[in-house]
Length: 424
Image 1: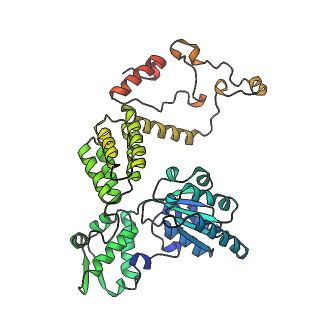
Image 2: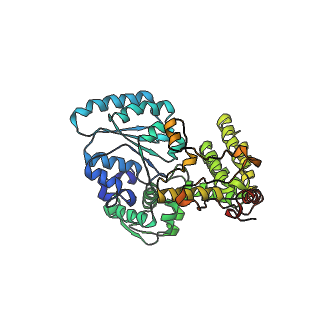
Image 3: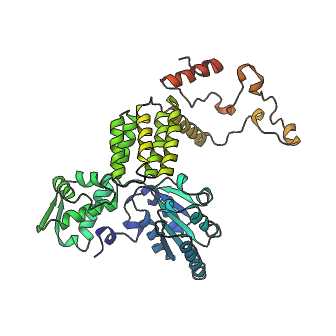
């Protein structure tokens, strides 16, 4: 008998739970399905939020040939074999066959390169699924040929709805008398993961021989303590632990940060996954308060890549202790988000003429580059001039925060720009 999560996997969009920003009325993927026009895309999100299910629903509802590969076990040869089979199927359908690649972030550069021509020529429609940030793991040419859609952890309401549906419709569970009295433990241990929720539900029901099963928080906790690995090979709180790790660094507690990292190491986490989070934390949380933090984080990433484990734990630990003990600032993180927000609001504002490149006579005649002041020709290599587009000339994005390093930066900016940057 298949596990409950497989028995309950939907084949219609109407039965799909969650991700309404993508599949709700008027949403982008629903529109694609209704128009029967699917373009290549990558689904990025944590485990158990419906990436594979969504790909299968699309293939089922559009009646398109569907091929699937796992990046863990497939190589270039398997990719090319599927592409050849897809070419043969093009004569029998108006739509390109779908190639679904699970864990696409695990594909090597050569494996990803082998997909490019087939995607570009429309031989296949690629749907990739990844739990890792595609900008780190997917090559730029392939990423540029695909839309990126982000899937979110399921909400508490989604999870409860799914549990109730399982009890009412599953061929095995509906034969039992099951009542959900309390949901806190179910939701908490599921962590937004539908598969995890259904595995927990199945575990609780299988291990209870009573004719009537009343699901309470105590029952769920007791069953999971008896079977700590029964519902998720990565442990009960993969995303909770990485969250605790990052928040411990942010909160300047090196002991807690080391503890949560040790939990990940002992749980078999990919050390490069940990290293990437350390680099992100150095940029987001330490930032300009201590720019050396990013250098050390990158050095730890390089070291663990070269050394592997278990030796790689040492440079990771050095970086974690340094980051957690360092001064903190998120000013650069806030500044770039503010700048992106302005770009989205104001659109493509024209570059001031004096800042434009003028490689030809035509451009020079149009005053491109005219009146530009070369800062190195002035005392202290600085002179005031306009750099922002005219409509937002007074706009501020970067605000120095209160730490020794940024207070020095702020003083320098105030000396150059006057009241645009308040004197610290």
